[in-house]
Amino acid sequence: MRWPFIRNLPTDFNFDFVRLAPFAAVLSAILIAASVGSFVFRGLNFGIDFVGGAQIQVQTQKPLDIGGLRRVMTEAGGEDAQVQSLGAGNGAILRYRVPSDADLNQSIQTVKTALQKAFPGIEIRSAETVGGKVSGDLARSGAIALSVAMLLMLLYIWFRFQLQFGLGAIVAVLHDVVLTLGVLSIAQLEVSMTSIAALLTVIGYSMNEKVITFDRLRENLRKYKTTPLAEIINRSENERLSRTLITGSTAIIALSGALFLGGPVLLPLVFTMVFGVIIGTYSSIYVALPIILLWGVRRDDEDAIPLKPADARRR
Image (spheres, rainbow, N blue to C red):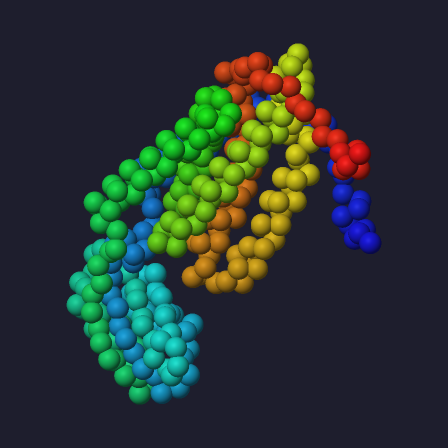
C-alpha cells in the first residue's frame, strides 16, 4: 500500500522551461557578478586549516563543557574556536585562529589565563602554534587537479554524448563552483578542509545531474527527430521533473537536521552541500541546456529501440 502523500504527487508536468531561460541567464549573471565582487572586496573567511593559529591541550577536572570552552576562547580573542575531545577522560585539544593584528604568543597567554579563570583546576598540558595545511604550492596543485578533472569530464561527456553537451556541463559546473564560493564569501562562513570536501561533493552531484539530464535529452532526440529542439528540451525536463524534485528534496531533508541542529561547527559544511544541491539542479536546466539549445545538436543518431514487455520477450 502506497502512502497517500506519494500517491497524490503529480507525475505529469507541462512547464515551459525554455521560455524562462533568458531571465535565468540574467539572474545567473547577476549572481556571478555579486560572487566575484565579494571575492574581490571581502574575500573568503579561511579557517585554521588555511591560515594557522594556536593549539592548546587541556585536562579538566569535571566533564568537558565544550560550549563553555569554545565561548571562553572566543571571548579571549580567539577566532574560529574549535574543541576536539581526546576520547576517554576529560582531555581536549583547543584550536583557534589568531587575529591578524594580534601577537601570537600574547594571544596564547591571554587564552590560557581566561581558561584558568573560567575553569578552576584546569591543567594546561601544552600550548603551541599551528601552521596552515594549505600553502600556496598546494593551492596551485589543487587548481591544476581541478582543471584536469574538468578536462576529463569534458572528454567523457563528449565521448558519450556530443561536444556541446560536454561544454554545457563544464560551464554549468564552473557556474556552481563560483556561486557556492560566492555565497560562502558573502555570508563569511568559515572555509576549511571540510568545506573543500563539501565543494567536491557539490561538483560530483552537479555533474551527475548533468549526465542524467543529457541522457533523457538524447533519448528524446532519437525518438522525435523532426521536433524542434526547444520542445524536446521542455519535454525531457518535464518527464524527469518528478525524479529531480524527489531526489533533491530527499537530499535536503537528510541534511536539514545537521543544518539547523548541528551548530556552528557543522554549519559551513552542511550549508555548502545544501546550497550545492539547489544550485546544481538549477544549472542543469538553466545553464547546461541553454548552451545546447544555442549550439544545436546532431540528429543523425540511431533511432530509439522501444522496450518490449517482459512477458513478450519470453515468448
